[in-house]
Image 1 (spheres, rainbow, N blue to C red):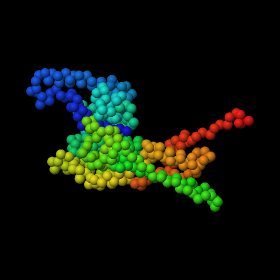
Image 2 (image 1 turned 180 degrees about the vertical axis):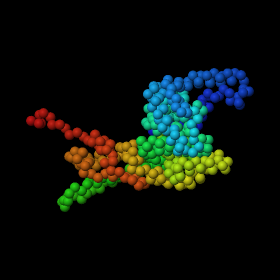
Image 3 (image 1 turned 90 degrees about the vertical axis):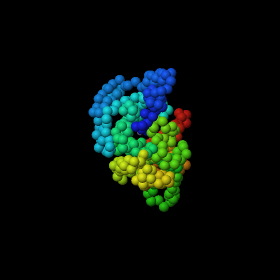
Image 4 (image 1 turned 30 degrees about the vertical axis):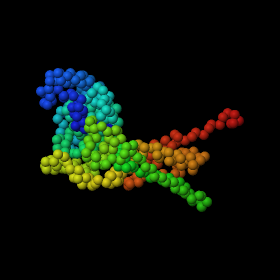
Length: 401
Ligand SMILES: [Zn+2]
């Protein structure tokens, strides 16, 4: 998963660490010793900056720096494809000169900082630089996310809290269809986990094979599984108060994922009604009124949400389609593998699991959602069950005689 920084993220970290410390106006009249000390600290910090990757390739509006020509060319191709699409999708967007660095671990500094430890990509507005991990789960989508931060004009700064993260995720999913279901499943399930949990229903039913009046009645096995987050449920309105993408915002990964999920849910509900233009109109209207940012009530009204966490949780579950449910089971396969494995050990003792599974109808659905999937949609679950099947002992030579 890409938990990327925001356009304001790294600049905050830079301010805190002191690179800009030397000439801040309030300090001009300080004693000379302090100024010199600040200067030395600045030089030391500059020597900790990450070295630029060796290979450079130019593209329209910027440069890619990477470890090899091959890597740089690959990223340059991606930027060339994504750039015009982003400009077409987003109102008030542009790409004044930017750099994209491909790194082992994305960061401005040679040594990682706590606030960016879980990031696959970062955007530093003060350096006009995107930093990408070459090991990103999905390099193109991570790049699209960071390019969104880089492209957004001033008017978008009116988005409160973490919403810019939701926008960058939503744009990246619409530009990179490959892997988008996985991103949506991750974000929407995180939104559910942040607002109380995610309930899944499993039904297991033997398939009727042929008419046999002596056959025992078919027995249905049903269970409700509740997935819970590892942090306490948050007030969903905190997503408007807290900027989870900033490197200066200290949050453990589970809580951060929750805010990314809630932000994604809000943006997707607004964008699916009136596109990004509707979200941007909220920013323009707030700016026109002279407000500092878009009012929470206006975002809630546009998204059809309120302060009740139950509504958020239900909205997130209902936003998941079939592909997202499959990805959700792929993310947490154990609940289904264990349920089926237990069922087979009890009900199909003596039969091999491969054949026993063929005689079962298995349905999985979200308790609050609209879709369900079967075992044929989940080949990885079937494989896991067969891999866990106890092997029958081979007859020894002695017993074979
Ligand atoms: Zn981001």
